[in-house]
Image: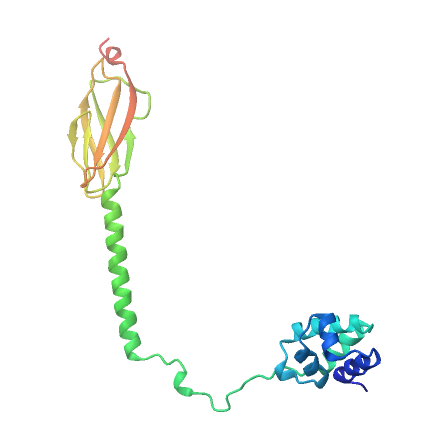
Length: 212
């Protein structure tokens, strides 16, 4: 059974081609062709490159590329895996008290940093503000209404420029006077950083109806 090296060398001899002429025809270094014929795999490139060499040589030597590649695949030695018979046990990862301490410190630092970032974002953002009463286009039939809603617990609230008391849970309610010329309730919530949120409610005064 012919090996890949003997097959190529024998075919080259029949074509009466020297290594140099075959190298010129295939554009493959003469040293690589020589090593391929001698099957000196250790000095040849990786298998995909060697396969390309074999196909080019087969074309010049009028050989079947499929057959030559099949012979190469059969003869090409498998890549050896380097196995350390005595693995270095010292490189094995071991969880130590030192790592526990470092992890704990990192956790505390990240927690504190995350809290500070949260507090900073909460500080610079305008406060939330929701109005429960009155609703939009609410018909008002009395000279006084109770405006209620909720905001951030540390915000201050003014309703039509009248201060309102904010409870610990952020809720607020206060009574304001309504006149015939009052068509809007304006609620402003101001954060500690001075950021404002404003909500307006249009109202429809109908005070005369209660006087008839």
